[in-house]
Image (cartoon, rainbow, N blue to C red; front, side, top):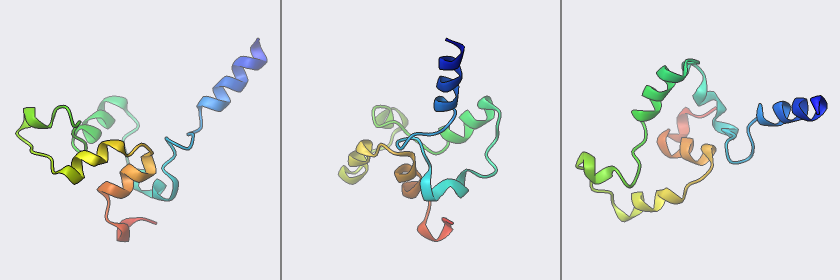
Length: 86
């Protein structure tokens, strides 16, 4: 059981294909390690499609289609100009 728990911790300590920042990993440099502070950063970058109207935001059909973006790398590419990626 101990060995299994160790393997689980190893597995879950690394991002999978959907959570890996991929070629956009450099964009995460300098982010706060404190969860509360990190929450403020994320809340300033993303707006959930179901909450847009509550904030007075009208999403274009193109922006509404972005709800299908799943991987972190794709999301990071969407919010960051390509010239800034390393």
